[in-house]
Image 1 (spheres, rainbow, N blue to C red):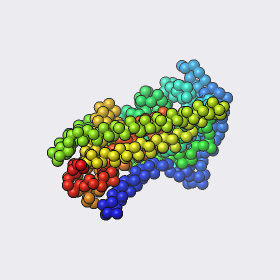
Image 2 (cartoon, rainbow, N blue to C red):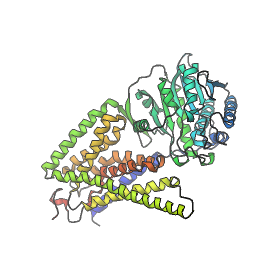
Image 3 (cartoon, rainbow, N blue to C red):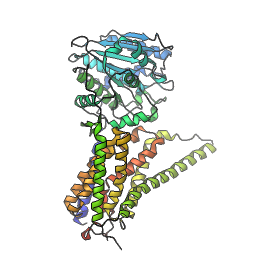
Image 4 (tube, rainbow, N blue to C red):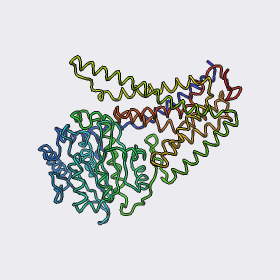
Length: 546
């Protein structure tokens, strides 16, 4: 094997490791057992509360809701607090909130922290994940705080009722309870599944200060302003929606893998992942302790674009930078295209590179559609034979993983088939056209999402601009390829994995689009593998093969 092929393989291997590291970094920490130190969060200790709460479905107004409410009152008393019950004087309905307060050691009159989770479930399931986990996390957080130094700020605990039917409890709290006017920060804990990492997926407006403090508070940050834009487009809300409408600053935490169990009878305590509860709880304890030492009365209110990197740090910058950066990317793209054209690259080849990526998307979707049609035919046949149909939602993760493999393979096959006719820089420039288009579109309409497209675009364009200084057979060229692919390698694989874990089969189309776009962004890493043997860059990168 030529030495260049060894370098190609090493570069591609490093790229795979970077992408895999991003996925691995987002895994929740190992659950701690009941023997963990008393001042740290333990999922083992929290599990007892989950099992007690999620014995049976407990929707608002049910006998089991009353059972859970009595249990929470008892647990709060065991933690040295004086719980109180709140019923509505303005809204009709059987909602009852359970509240408690722990005073801080700081001066009176300062804004307090609100820890919030709803204790009701849907009628279809016992709600171990949604949201017995959130309630248990808060109870274990209160216990750990009790065993450590007291907080400066007061701590208000709200276990609200009726979240599943219209946020009755949280509306009742903000409209009728005097403590609501004393809240300086709301920390809400919810779930949309039974596993996966705990994500800080939503903030209140004017989030720059909150994000900066959150990044310093937690040991394994996982947050992105992309989730804010996606969440706004979804028909889902949580109690934090009510708090935000009341003008309360806040952070919203949830986990979303194992969505097949969400709002079903499968949302049982035994199916709730202990590592997930550990991450959820660490977020709760670490943010409570951190913000509990801060003055929450008059925080700054600037908005930022933000994203976590390898679950170790959070990068944030003003949201007003989105459009200037997108304009800079457009100008750089024009310069790169001009330079490629001056070196002999026809614009038609660049347009063909863009069309190739679009063809990969359409071909992948067509193939996947055919697979789904075959699967539907199998179900029809089973019903005709008087056999139960297969519930595909139970197998959504392997099915969607297979779809991702189909899309990635299809893209590589199309790239390889075009290698005899289109030199790799033109294919890469064409692929980056779509990235630039999405960078500009999101900078205009969804600025919180713009980082996801902007930074792979900018780095990819820099890599193309450096091609003339690094012959393809050189080690330097491979280093440039890898370095300029880093944003895509760090940001995209974890996002794809999160989509696989958290979205159902009805969201397969956007996932496939993201996968093909990712393959286009890292195209330089495959340039040597996808180049036909006859096509030698010794004669220049735009030499055609006759």
